[in-house]
View 1 (cartoon, one colour):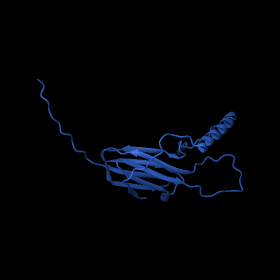
View 2: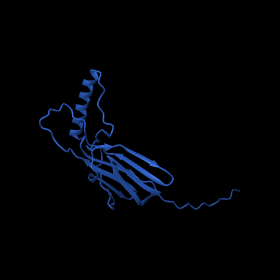
View 3: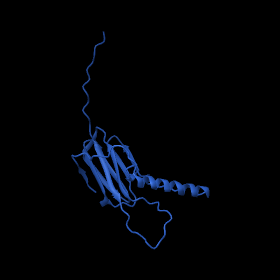
View 4: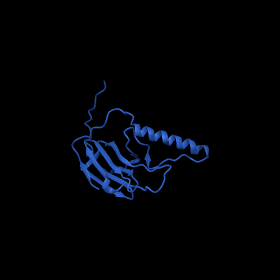
Length: 165
């Protein structure tokens, strides 16, 4: 896992035009949930990835923490290989992106429902002013990406006393 510094900020699509595949996926999910709810079975939900975004991207869950000395970002990406994840910093923005690939296809089995999501994912986070972008460490262990970034001291603003008369 390497953290790369990128000088170009990626262009993201403006607006949220509906993707027909994503819309169809949501409608089919709704149908299955309504059918199974009628039988007293709880709806199916993934706890690792939230639903697809309007652009059809997966959205992995992120935990962000801070201590006096460092910031930490933890991203759960189960089923994703370390080589399929990329972390970049541009300006005051950190971009975490990658792809969850479908490894095999079983043509002999009939599936009534596939709940595992496959595809690209991306999270774009703003960095605080005191984040030290020159001291970033990223580790990947068992489907969890952890990024640690030290905090730097910010110059104290000049304070000018105003005499009250």
